[in-house]
Amino acid sequence: MKYFISKIILLITFSLGFGQNQTIFKQANTLYNEAKYERAIKKYEQILSSKKHSAALYFNLANAHYKLNHIAPSIYYYEKALLLKPEDKDINNNIVFARNMTIDAIETVPEVGLKRFFNNLIKAFSFDTWAWLSIVSICIFVALIITYRVSYTTSVKKLSFIASFLFLMSSLCCLIFAFQNQKLFDNSNPAIVFAKTSEIKSEPNLRSNKAFELHEGTKVNVLEEVDNWKKIELSDKNTGWILADDIKLIKNF
Image 1 (cartoon, rainbow, N blue to C red):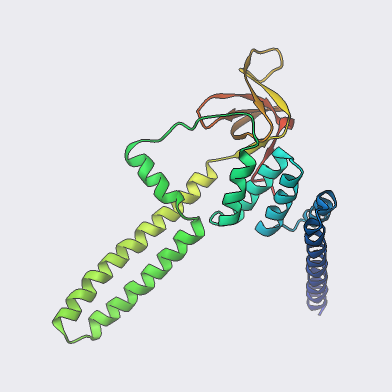
Image 2 (cartoon, rainbow, N blue to C red):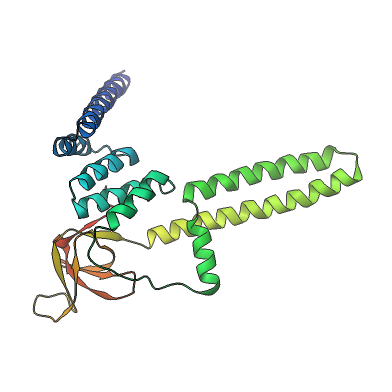
């Protein structure tokens, strides 16, 4: 009985919290539409403080920061929105404008050959999309096998058998791509530089030589951590050490 009551209380609390966040979200959107961006940001952050997040929340928060020319926060929140909804056209379009505000022009080392082809193919869809494609393919495979078994026409049996084999292979490929997509995601630890200017050191200490310099909004990949230093890699494969306080990890929710 006590367990049942506690579950009811938890459900009511969750419902009230959800309803309150929805109200705050609408208030924030109203403030945004009235060009009161600073106040809108505070409302959006109020929702984040309750440990609730969504692609729409991060997208709107990024838009508000972008309107105020806040380079690092706008890119940071667009990137977080993309993690939750990687195929959203609005997020992908807006983040391009935000990235154009950055100072650092870092070239990306191009991949070549089959590795480039397969990585581009794997990244074409999210893990969830590849998984759903695999499920759809296996369902079609089952339907075709049933058609093969119940059909009395030779041509239909032949066609359904060949098609079922192709959809089985398609299902397996989509499943492999889904796990490879997840592997690529797990192996990356992206972050955004928040410091106006940050000296990147050759070693994790202040006395070491300056390797290069980065500015706010630049995206880096964190490789390892030593005390209050993080080793980062850029898209051009240059590496160095940055103070942990100068960046914010995108995957932290």
